[in-house]
Image (tube, rainbow, N blue to C red):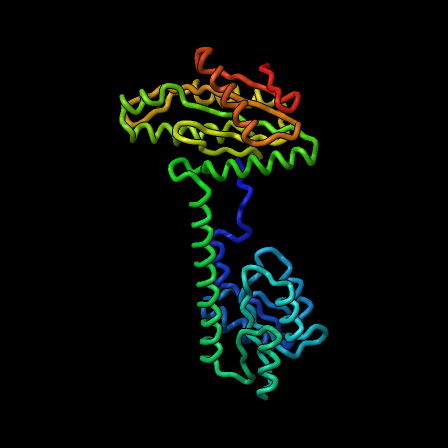
Length: 329
């Protein structure tokens, strides 16, 4: 049910809000209030710090602003040092820094930019110039958030089944490989469930493929709700689903499988003006031994065949007690 590749970035709406958030680090209280007032009048959310040390503390917090206005000359940690510290940690996403100072010598400008500043504003400055330079930073950050979201959308599409929204075949098999390795390292059991819709072809032939798609989506939804919160589910192919359960022995595996079976069989799927009763057959296998994903999948497929052969709408669980030996329980 969980996603092992959850992005570290905020949701798009959260990031959009952050593009309007600005951190001001300025030790002069009058100048700090002037900056704060102007930025707020322009629609920005402003966080203030009275020195570089306080600014650095704020930047350690979750969802700290990514648009920063730093005064060069501050007691303790100055703006230049804050710039260096930010760039040294190579935070992702990038933080845009506008360095403000009374220094106007070209060598000072170069020094500030080399320390990691993206732009430079000399005191005293024109209000219009300040707004324009802050807007440049905002455009930069907005573009970055859009690129991040586009990348995450592409990654999601590459790893998730387009119809059901759960893991794709390739992704769930990658998860299985990682969980098997983790199980060996931690001496814990890994289980899988092969879940197949009974008589799905008949549903398509009787009600049409659009109804069949709706049945697949609802089945995936019920499986997701029935497994444990830290388990993984994917579409293995067609009307077949695969669940990967870490730290799960045969008894727990059977309990989860029965919960999945009941969740699907006990309540018909209601679609517009029709109600469709569906069932699934489930084959499961658990092992704490070193084995390959192909061996485990083969055993689960064998158990699934037994469930089909024994009447469908049932669960068959196998256990790898010895490498290469599977025993139905």
